Length: 130
Image (cartoon, rainbow, N blue to C red):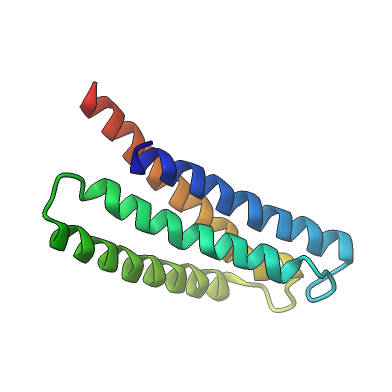
């Protein structure tokens, strides 16, 4: 299996985990009321980081191993920066009296944008190989 295809699967797992976390929060009636919140967040976070690593490996395919390792490090740093920027943006537009949904919005936006990037990369790689 190619790295770009594995990145798509990992990105979908990330979105699925964070969506399930939000459903668990909604069913429980708010933040910190569901025992599933923590494990689903960690699953989504692990999937997010895995997706970034796999995407970095897909983008550096055919390069020297040192360049690939540097690409992975740069990808993880960029992923962390992206998450921080997304959180700052959501915080900036958050209303004065937000519901729990605003606390989850940065995760949804980040996961959706990462999936879009992964799908674009996968499609470009598939078209290039064909």
